[in-house]
Image 1 (tube, helix red, strand yellow):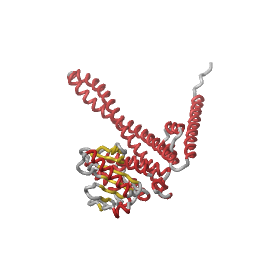
Image 2 (cartoon, rainbow, N blue to C red):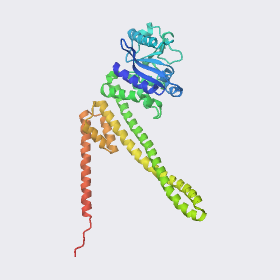
Image 3 (tube, rainbow, N blue to C red):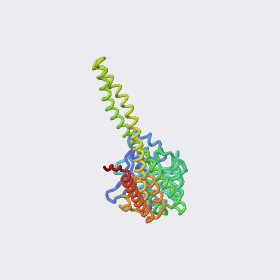
Image 4 (cartoon, rainbow, N blue to C red):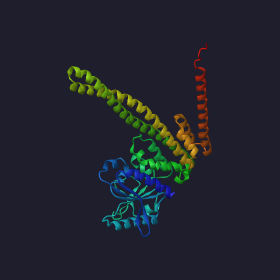
Length: 390
């Protein structure tokens, strides 16, 4: 459990703080006994605007930090180990002040809170504690955090109902919310565990099924993002095509009109005016047609690629590996409705049923295509005109 929890936390903090500074996971603290900090973060310049949008994680990222992740409640021994890493690191860097040490716990360390000299951290929400200032230690007890947007990213490091609530809250945010970008890697790992062994995240059977449904919704979000990317690519392709065609048409029309006007008003003035007007009209028409065609093609291709990627991701998350023959079928399929049907099957049916469904559907589609081709060939033969005999 500790390993998967570490991976989820490292994914989340790497995406959350990576754009604001240097995030280094598994940092060796002492070469003699190979101590490793889960995460070491050093902020970069001019990062305040992004950090303000990240809630408590953004507040943590305002200064350098060492972050340690625990999937359960850490005891005194674990906390001493964390402090040892911090002191060793500060000694090696000759730091005059302690590097802020954040311990994030998915369980509630009752004994530590009672006897460890920790107190509520002023100005921070419930669930955030601190030690004496000279130690530089802060403790975040994830189950105690209030359910609000500013704590969402940290609640994704929780277990059971806390994690379930965090994923539900993430689904409720608009698609452009920064939390979707930051949580992408963590959600992928959480989905993998939920589909294979939900008990590792302290989820009951019912909670696992509910989170499974939310995982399916995430795949639909991936499809939507594929559509969005397709539209962007389509717009870029259409713009390029429109400008190119507009320039070509503008030059042609400009030269033609320039010669005609040049006979009357002079070649120099005619070419200038003709090219200017021709370029304007050509750009206008070329952009219009190019954008239309580019958006159409980009939208179609983006949706297909998003569906294919989501389908393969779902299959790998649930079953570990995907046969090459099945991957080849998915790659070769261009039927959007078929891909959506396979994706729905992938998140609910058993492995053999899923694989056989995909392969059988592909064979049926090939048979239908062969029948249509044969029918077209027969129609062409019967419809061919017969030469009159003498």
